[in-house]
Image (cartoon, rainbow, N blue to C red; front, side, top):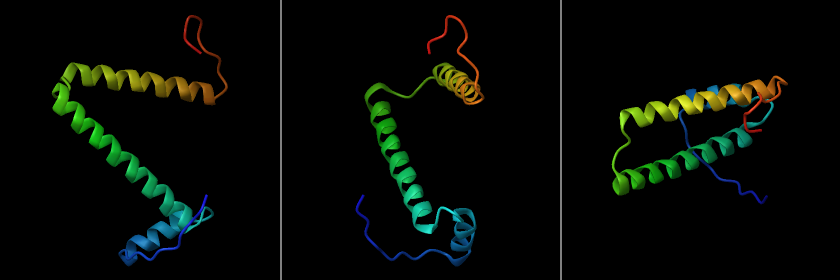
Length: 92
């Protein structure tokens, strides 16, 4: 992937914290990852705003069901990372 060197200005204290966190990855890789994350969040926010304009806000019970489903998915991913097999009847 092509890269381009740029100059940015950030608060000194923040830079010190980032350098400590970036450590082995390097500052450039850390900043690139953070910018990708921010860009993706901005795009998701645009989608959420559009969906709410188009279909209205999400109801509380719908939000709770979605959060519960995400928790179930997180638990399944964690179980697979730990080396477990899918339960019978579950999708792989």
